[in-house]
Image (tube, rainbow, N blue to C red):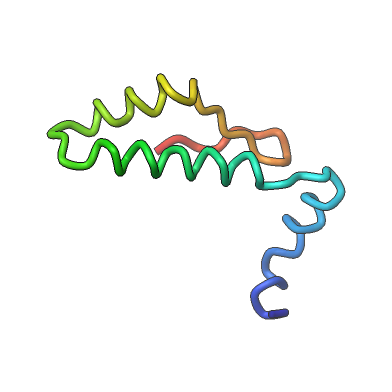
Length: 72
């Protein structure tokens, strides 16, 4: 376990200090996976993305240090 945690030590300490929990992110991820399952078989990924955005609103990912998640 220490081999897994050692490289992530700084992020773990920041999360503890800021009292960041991943419950909200996990809930959104579950909702997104449900929508993807419903949309399975559609011809366009844009339709799925539109349904996710319509259901959950715009998804704004902010990292604990205040920076935004780089978009791909």
